[in-house]
Amino acid sequence: MTNVPSNVNGIEAPLKLLSSHDISNPGFESMRRGEFVDKSSLNDPSAQIDLRNIDVFGTQLSSFTLGPSSDGERILKVEFNRATTEADAFRFLLQLADAWSASLAHGQRDSWYGNLYVHILWSRVKVLSPPSGTVGISTFLKMTSTDHIVVDPLALSRLRWSPLTDIFVEGMKSSQPKSKFLFWFIVLEELEQRQEFVRLFDPMFTPEEKAKLQEVVRSNKTALQRLNGLLNTPTATIQSRSEKLAHIIDTIGSSNIAGQSGKIEIDQKLCSKLINQRNKVAHKGESIDGYLLYNVLFPLSLNALNYILDQDDQNTSVQMQPTGVAGFAGA
Image 1 (cartoon, rainbow, N blue to C red):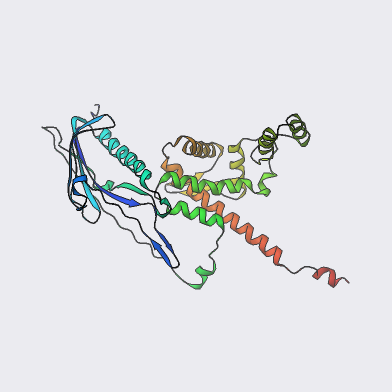
Image 2 (cartoon, helix red, strand yellow):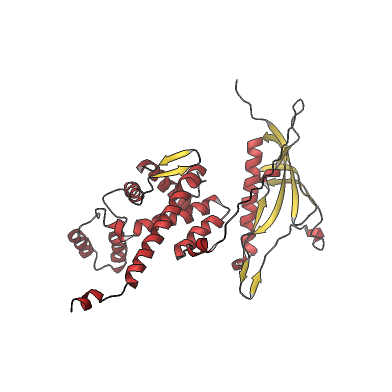
């Protein structure tokens, strides 16, 4: 039996105008907030906004209503001229929020203090006016979890920080999966750049081949600069990037990680998926595979960060050891 997508005549969703971030520095604090307003009620930002017979993305809407504001939240109610599927209604809502958010950028001259964007409270979104003869069901589940973080001298003494820690934490703080993916992948890229791993692989060009190629374009400074960038990048090797990443991950002891449903083996195929996902997000803006993001990239990025911090600690310890002791003893 084939499931027929249910048709809906409208959609209702709580909306808020939020800021991407606030600024809280020693001696300075800045917060940005937004309110939806109607031209006819600029002096009353809490008033209801009613629009009739408008066109958005080529979709004809018989009504577009933003209910009275309550603590910055408004209930958006959209009624379509023609019934649509539930999936298309949700897609319309998402595209509306994205396009509306992008349009707000034009008026934000001081974006340093946070970008306003349209936030949908998805847990309370519901479809409207089911066709006659059917039963409309709406459910809402709210869950709160609390983690207890033990604070003691040992836990505090084990804390470590580096600029890479800041990048990793930016991924933790981001609410957008695409941002999380790019921040956490940077940690893996940093792992690829480390000399102990670069020397494990065969360069694409020998020193003699590099010299010959450089001689060909030596008279063209721009071309030579671009060529040197290609020749000197540590990623230009005979081995593929996925092959190298899989080998590096195995070298740091992370070829098997604990996923939510059991052990996950990190092989070249899975590394290739990570790299392809990174390229698609960076260049095409495609959506994120949640499994790759949370079950694979997140633990790998954390392991890579800890490896790099461990190595940096060891290098610092070696550099801080007294020198000349052996020579003095043998004198």
